[in-house]
Image (cartoon, rainbow, N blue to C red):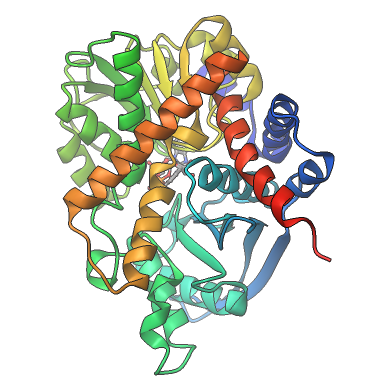
Length: 430
Ligand code: NAD
């Protein structure tokens, strides 16, 4: 099996991510005996918004871009979810990702629904001024389809606090002077100076690590001295490596859209993160040996944290992995066939809907702070997140044991129980 073949085994455009998520939904629906009508409602997003908008390029030309916002469900609160800038963005993927936001908010008992949006671009091919104009025009094109009590975007792949601040500023400047400051919570994941929350940047990774620590305690697995491999070294991947380092776990291999690196001694994560901030990728980092994607998946380590795209682990990768536990920082990194191989091999999986829900949880804290014009200290945010993650982790694992389902189905099931109670109580209008 060559690296090329591994890459070729799962071209993104042939992968029906939304069908995969609906497969998990069906399994969970049976597990909790979900009413037919609630299952039907949740099987599709409420709104699928597509906008085409022009952007002035640096060379003076104008280009038309297509942007999406998928609003899956708002039964428990405003639509909530990230904005992705990536060349693989598609309606199908965003429908899957939007629905996963609904499950995450419901599982974490946060008063939000689920949404996701994006633009099909490679952000690395655009200058900062182009990205700013694109973000602003996209926000303007979405117009009243988003709002601080209606639909609240956040960062995802290819976007960051800068993108969120541009979105916020554009939105704030469209609503008039008196109401301007009340609009700050139109997005979360902002920089601190523009109204972001302490602890938001690392929140997703922090949540992953809290789950990993709980898993290690449950399984009498000493984390100190162990090794990890991490796919993706952006926001989630880099902070995961930094937090693991604090626990004495060294990251010995990583990779991104430019390739993969191996360092058996362990990377110094702050330095690698700094290199990525300066250069846009891990390419050219001197302290590691270049390896293929195939070699990356075959490296012997204790922990694997996927923190890039969906559908990265199919059957071949699942057979190759030599780790004891996978904590899903990315959304949907394992395809169902790959997951079955891993389950057969008794490799523990801490599923995305649980593991990476620290992001939306601290986004909720940011939104609350903005709403009350407050600023919480990092310790307060960290403490609340810790409590929320531990609670969710144990609820999921307890359910999985009680009902004899895997943790992914347990996480979906708990989310469905919450949503279902709300639907049963409120009924369907009219
Ligand atoms: P990011 O843009 O900061 O980083 C993404 C990383 O993935 C980069 O290192 C990029 O080079 C790499 N990558 C892109 N294409 C790749 C490819 N084909 N092969 C290998 N690597 C590739 O994004 P992020 O915010 O860190 O998000 C990563 C994952 O975590 C996504 O699945 C996202 O949905 C999920 N997630 C993010 C958050 C958040 O708060 N940012 C919250 C929950 C889940």
